[in-house]
Structure formats: structure tokens, C-alpha cells
Length: 313
Image (cartoon, helix red, strand yellow):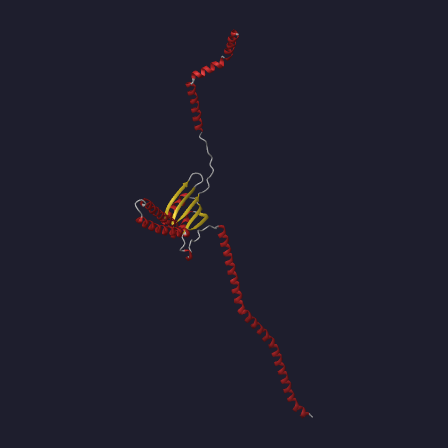
């Protein structure tokens, strides 16, 4: 009975040991599985956050840069609005208008603390780009300066840019007059007068001596018309070639001052009046004495007249 039990005991022991080992391995695997899972989740989270962290930082940097750019633009815009100053616009003529006969007339108004510096700047521009047409300067009371200059139309923009140094520009106007039609009309008139002059000269050669004077008068009229047409064309070309720039500069506001009257002038005037009165009295002394006697003896004279009238009656 004991031998079979003894023979079964080692096999059971082996079985028990195998079961216990398998249980331990299962427990270890079960324990290691959540650890591995947590480590995997951490790795996944690290992997998920690792590439996302730089992008978030980049987005933050971009947002900060955009915000700084907006702030700078707002500051520039506010500063530009506060310190906004007019500037002369470019007068570049398009290629389609190059064949037009355009006359430019520019009016500029400045404010300046120094009228003399503004005048020097205007004169320098006139000397460099054209010539001075007129100038007026007022330094007493409200200081101001006016000038009209003629500037070459090809260099008008450069001249206007340099004129901005004359002061703070607060008003600007540019007028453009198109003389193309007038130029064409003057050309037509000139060609017509040329043909008319040729016909009249031919007529003059065929006329008799009696009509010679009349033919000469007609020829001279044609020549005068040709000269007038040429002169009108020259005036148009001159206005187109030389632009007119009118400059006005207002100086600082005049400070009110206390004006002390010259009291010595009042004393002098009083003395002169007294001397004039005495001179008049001396000149009319006899008349003054006569008038004074009449006033003083008026009652006596009146009574004497009454007595004389009573005796007569």
C-alpha cells in the first residue's frame, strides 16, 4: 500500500511545482502587463507631446510676432496721423498722355518759423530749376512771404520735393490745363494762312496797276495772320514748357505788444496850437479889438442908437 503512494508522491510534487511556477509566471506577467501598459502610455504621451511642443511654441512665437507687428503698425499709424504732413504727389505723366500739351500750375502754402529761411529755399529752387517771376516779403506784424516761380516742366517734381524744405506744407493744389486742342487749331490756322498768302501773291502778280495796292494789303494781312498764329503757338509751348509754382509762407503769429504813446508829441502839439493861436491873434489884432469893444460897449451903443432914433421922430 505504501509503495504506490511513494511512487505517486514525486509525480504529484512535480505537478504542484509546475502549477506553482505557472501561477507565479502568470502573476508576474499580470503585474508586468499594467506596468508595461503605463510605460507604453507614457511613451505614447511623450511621443504625442514631443512633436506638438515645438509647434505650440512656434505658434506662440508667431502670435507674439504678429501682435508686435500689429502694435508697431498701430503706433506707426497713430504717429503718422498725429504727425501727418502733406507731401507733393508725383507728377509722372503716363505714356498715353506724353503727346498732350499740358500746362501745370501749382499752389503751395507753408507754415514756417523763419520767413527768411523759407525765402532762401524758394530762391535757391528758382535759380536751380527755372527763374523767379515775382516775390513779396512782409516782416512787420503778421510775417508772410509770397513768390511766383517758373520751373521747367521736365524737372517739376524734383523742384517741388526741394520746396518742401520751405516749411510745413498745409495746403497744396495742382491744376493741369490741356492746350492740345488750341495747339492743333493754331497749326490749322498757320497752314491756312500760308496757302492764302500764296494765292494772294499769285493774284498780285496777275493784277493791274490799279489793283496793286489792294493786292499788297491782302498779302500783308496774310503775313500778319501768320505771325499771330506763330506767336500763339509759341505762347502755348512756353506755358507747357515752364510750369508756374506759387508759394505762400505764413510766419509765426505776431505777439501783441503794449504800445506806449509818445507823450512828448502831445506836448509838442499843444505848444504848436498855442503858438498858432497867438500868431492868429497878432495877425488879426485890430479886428479882435473892434469886436471886443463892440461887445463891451454894446449897451451904450444901443442906447445911443435909440436916442438918435427918438430925436428924428
